[in-house]
Length: 111
Image (cartoon, rainbow, N blue to C red):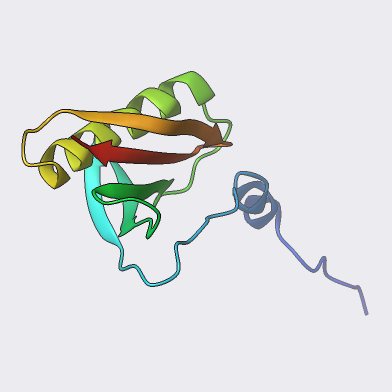
């Protein structure tokens, strides 16, 4: 009797391309597409200051060997759409702006 490997090569390659997805407690996911890529968007007030929001954007599709600069550009495009919509066209500023792998996090305030 021969033993079979626990994982196949394609399964291992898929697992190797995975990144940890964050979450914001008390939020629901909204899906948005940019450049045919799907992103999960989570938004909630910070409870620190009026009109201040915490935004998290995660890739909703598998990424193998991602171009982190391009992924950051796409995530920032999603963030811009959400900030413009949330602030209803008013100006906004970001006090936090950063990437963790292919996931984007920001805190912004509507002025």
